[in-house]
Length: 144
Image 1 (tube, helix red, strand yellow):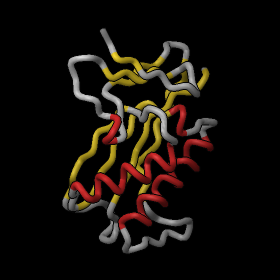
Image 2: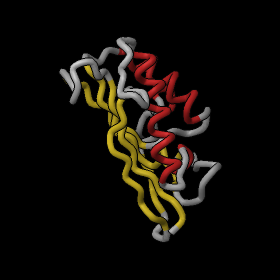
Image 3: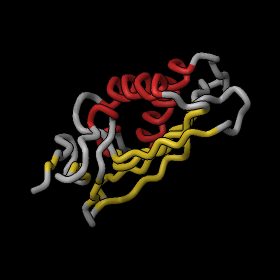
Image 4: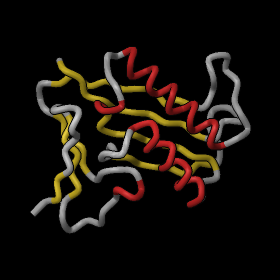
């Protein structure tokens, strides 16, 4: 039997945590995101922690908050919201478990307390800009 946690805010994305796999919710993601066939898929390029002027804070938490805010801005431009996100890919420079906990806390603030999208976190030695510490890309589903 599957433990199914469906997103309460969109019928286009179903988030599933099947029995036989550990519960990923404390880590801020779901194992499976299934999209309905009648949706339009939106791809959001990796969003870093730059503000509108292209400035980067040296603080990891500040960059995460800004990257999530940038993601929300990009989603809105495609008539989507965090509730429509099926998949995240997160790149973190010099990843640690402390950074994971901090990212999870900020993700919960941005996405709410419900089930989170499927997610892959990739530790990297650096990103496109020298001072860039995090990058977040997304795949969302909106009504066709």
